Length: 212
Ligand SMILES: Cc1cc2nc3c(=O)[nH]c(=O)nc-3n(C[C@H](O)[C@H](O)[C@H](O)COP(=O)(O)OP(=O)(O)OC[C@H]3O[C@@H](n4cnc5c(N)ncnc54)[C@H](O)[C@@H]3O)c2cc1C
Image (tube, rainbow, N blue to C red; front, top):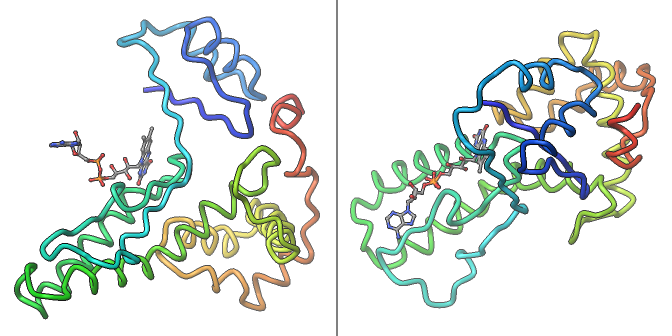
């Protein structure tokens, strides 16, 4: 299976010629070479989605026994690979709560579950929307000075991660939701990030980034 992803209005077309051209525009020719050599087993399927959350925890009248989780509650941009982990965490949350409450139909259970679930979503939501808000064409993003500062810091973390295994491991743990983002602010990581020198600007358009 070959998946091409794009951001900031620069999306891979779903016709074979456009898909091939997009692959050829990438800095590394390997995917374009695969496309040339392999026989397609299916048509190209496109998927376009935004980070999307439905606030069931804010419902004034939550029907008892009506539980929402997974993508039905919150969809993430799939390029960050979070959806299944988050859905599994939510299933565990439901399991824990059911052990205590015993009955999904008990009065207040659905509201309690949705509130806890919304709290659990805070970090993954921040990770996905924070990254997407780097791009000028992203709608509804937060361009506050704090978020911009965070982006600059993370740019340095990326660079440090390329040659510092502790930084790389910490970053991966955060992205894969095995550790909270606070681990990226440990003195050891901050020092490595400060010493790193980003060689490219993530705020440049993605078209420009692909060419460079
Ligand atoms: C292109 C793409 C790539 C992704 N890559 C990753 C990744 O690398 N890592 C990751 O963690 N996540 C990834 N995700 C996200 C992940 O697939 C979802 O977050 C996850 O599948 C959500 O699980 P879910 O059970 O909530 O919903 P779904 O997996 O969508 O399951 C819902 C099910 O309900 C069925 N259904 C719908 N309506 C009805 C109905 N009326 N009656 C009966 N059945 C119905 C559907 O057919 C479906 O089987 C990706 C998503 C996409 C689109």
